[in-house]
Every structure is written in structure tokens, then in C-alpha cells.
Length: 271
Image (cartoon, rainbow, N blue to C red):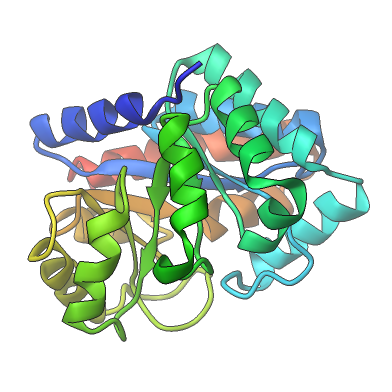
């Protein structure tokens, strides 16, 4: 089975045709449980997210702040495995028909086997992978297998990325470019980094691939602000925080659905 990169491309193009940015939600697999995580992904999509990134919990998540680290710890203590990540993708995609990516560090894929990982992700209906710590110059093996299975390879660019580096990254990435709005880790912040708009402008100068902004977006007003200059708005910690603050698993899922609706209005400028 080929992957769903075309579904991802079509979804981002449809949002653009509506004159808005896409809303991309991030949720870790296995949090609060595997079943609870699947329910949360479905709720995000039902609530208004266009795309979901399913996080593969990692014991040393260099890009993730304390909120997502807490969720990852809960998932890892619960025994989450790559098979559970694939099940999360499979069941959420089957239920919603929407594009779902996996966000993971390179080490788990390397240990699992690139061919095995890409084949299973494509079979599950996954649209691709976001690989925040895989250097472009070391990505040929991954891209070979991802291309074979029709999976997007999403690389992360940062405000520190020089223009020449941006061009190298965007030349080989696919699906979209993940523009980290600031230097640092994920988390909610009072305001969106002023560097984000400049990074999007510089990245767009190198590629026609959509540029989506993450890190630090948590409110509908911030989503509306970012939607004014980016092709997509990525929100993770705000979803996870609402789940952590919920009284029980059912309330956590409803909190995700509610926030997705609020942010979906934000990317449409309805705030």
C-alpha cells in the first residue's frame, strides 16, 4: 500500500484554497493510555484539526518542553511501543480519513529498522514522518524508503538556519516544512516569536512546499496571528496541558475536542 502523502498535500492545498492556514495538532501516542491517545487524536480531528502529528514517546526528547515530557513519561511508564504508535495511526486514520504523521527522533527508527518502520507506517495509512533530529545530509536511507512507500519527510528549520541551509533542507523535504518559531523547546508562551514570520518568508523563498509554524502557539489569537503568514499552525503543548489538567480520561478527550474547535476558529480569523 502506498502512503498518504497525497492526502496530506491535498489537505494543505484545500485549506489554502479556503484562504486559511491548516490546523495541525500534536498528541503523543500512549497518553494517557494507548486507547485514550487514539480517542484524543480522533477528537482533535473531529474538533477541527486538519492534520495530526502522533508523537512517538522518547526518553530523551531534546525538542520537547516539560509538558510533553510529562506526557511522554506517562506513556513510557505505561509500556507504549512502536506497535502502539502504528495502531494509533491506523485506527485514527481509518476512523477519520484524515492525514496523520508520526513525529519521532531518529534513534527509535534506527533501532527498529528503517524499512520495517516505513512499511508499517504506510500500511497503517500514515502520511509521513517529522524527524526533528535527522540531519539532511544523513537522511538518504530514510528518504529512499519513505519515497518507496509514499511517505512525506518533514524536516524542521529554525530561526538560526542560514538561507543556504534552508535551501538544502527544502530541496529534499516533502509534505511541508516545520518552521520552529524560536530557538528552544516546545511549550505554551505568552506571545509568538517575532522571528517566526521572518523564518517563513526566508523558507518560502527556497520552496513551494507549504511552511507550517510550531512551538509556542497555544491560543486562538496566536493561531490567528500565525495563520496570517504561515500555511499551517502546529499546536502541541496546549493540547497536552489540557489533557494533563483534566479530571479523567473522558474529560481529557473532550478538552482536546474543545481546544481544536477554538483553534480552528482561530486559523479562520474568527477570534
